[in-house]
Length: 266
Image (cartoon, rainbow, N blue to C red; front, side, top):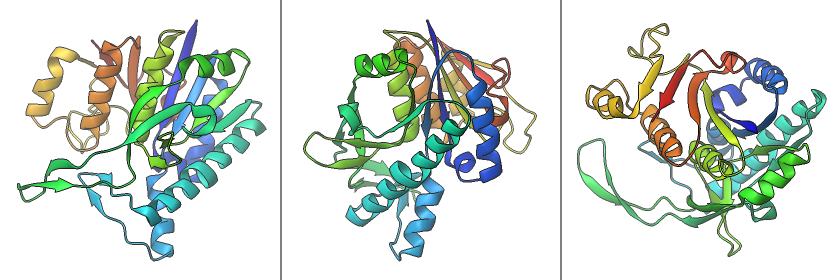
């Protein structure tokens, strides 16, 4: 049985017109499906309004105790429940989840890591209350999905010790896709503001239609794949190695056209 796991980025989630268009198309995807969302820009905006300074290192948010409150509020509350309500209005029986709900995603607090800084130096970084995923309860998710429920997953995990953890949404999407691969034939779709992986970031029409694993290292070395696209592709190829049938990186407007965008193959 086939299932589509769609990850939608914060840029789409935080624009009402873009989100409505995305949810119209998501609702029309045939068969079983899961939606995973981000919301980082909204979290940054709310934090700034509350006077809570934000620190980003290598595109990753340092999540101190006050920032954790903000991201939980925004991701698991405002963004998640808005999406759930909008999907219910479209006849989709959506259920909003964090990792803590039903113990569906268990994570551990990321240890201090040595990180290469913009000036080229390598320094230890404590990311705070950021989670790295240990396991996904795929059996429970599969049971919900079989009952007609469409999970809408926010990027908040937990550690089984009473602590919530800010967890990368791309990683949640790929890890959930891998976990569900033992129950379903999984297509993982990352959708955002671009039409796919671009050979030239300044040319929206320079979409690379297909990337195989053997080409990935060369594209990184040539600088074609960099920045936020790098971890997205790393997660994608790891998901393929672990049983996901295919990964598609595409524009949010194209999720009902799986032949568009960039397809990743092992």
